[in-house]
Length: 141
Image (cartoon, rainbow, N blue to C red; front, side, top):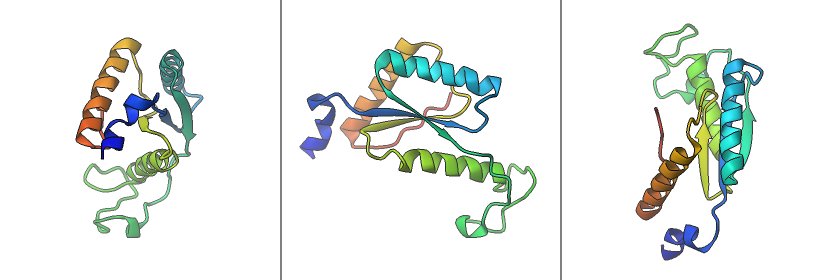
């Protein structure tokens, strides 16, 4: 347990910023790419783009906890193709990069407006999670 707690004290952590994208030529995603890439370059993090296509079919019932609550049309109370596609993108983003000390998952519309403030906040969260031996945290602004 002591080795896990001191992992950041003995070496520079291998932090990956995984950017979940699907329409990389859109203005929204280009702004996000520039923002995240700028942050990763300034602080020396590995920046990885995970590009996935939109999930356009009905989600598989066998992967749903409530198989009767699946819809092929937008419905806030049911699992739709967009919800399932988002789940798959996040799952892939995490599972493909478990070889790192930490992963920052950024969605396609993420913008970091102040690199220094965000880095300070990220450091606070990472240190807190490391003390608790907790391995998942979600920023949602």
